[in-house]
Amino acid sequence: MRILFAGTPQPAADTLAALLRGWDVAGVITRPDAAVGRSKKPVPSAVAAVAQAHGVPVLKTASAKTDETCDWVRGLAPDVAVVVAYGGLIPQRVLEIPAQGWLNIHYSLLPRWRGAAPVQAAILAGDESTGVTVFRLVPELDAGPVLAAREHRLAQQTAGELLEELTQVGIEVLLDEVLPRINGLAEQPQTGEPTYAGKITTAAARIDWARDAAHIARAVRAYNPAPAAWTLFGDPAAAQRLRVLRVHAAAAGGSLAPGEVAISKREVRVGTGAGELVLDEVQPPGKPVMRAADWGRGLHVAPVFT
Image (cartoon, rainbow, N blue to C red; front, side, top):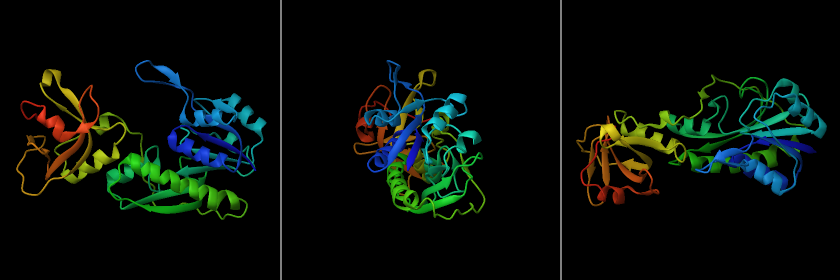
């Protein structure tokens, strides 16, 4: 079976690497090289790096809607296509090329959390479980029939940790349940009211200290590692940005106002709209990630977060 793979970030690269251990990957579609770091030097996507290391033909394109993409896919003559977070829609004329269609690995139990950021959305909403869905691509966003799904429990994972777990679940479902039985799998329509998870922005990750402590703690987990929850402190005319990476609930009974900070030798506590939080890991501007208590001991006065 000739497989076409489309994807861009690390979870997609991990899936591609697993496919290459036992399946015939005829070609890969990924996003163009992107500028990274202060040098702004273009760097291949994680998927491109894996494909190139294995000698797999690669098409780097910002849009799968071009004639070039359509002709390239047709020339490969794939039997089936697998997509994991490619970063763009696949048009109908390209969807029709593989005889077995296009399969998408999505990191939620559809139709809950269709869209770009299902992992973050599940954490932010306080869902008790999420999962992986392998479904057949259709032109409508994440709306195709389901071929396989597996539930996965949420604990206190960050988005990065949960995505790593779900990536491995997705690989298992694809390789053990879907591809070996592709000709005999029953397709099930999605049932229930869809919810949507839009792209994550840096602005959305700013902490609103007027929210309750439980919500803020979920937001910190949801935005870790990127773009990372953040807050401002210091002189309003030259406020500094502090990235907040890990927190936990403080003992009950505090009286700090929202955004008010109390620093002791062992901890940094912050007031919220309901309850208080202890900061565990932070990243001050221009510095590496550090224990919040160490950061706090270096301050002359306790700041106020805004």
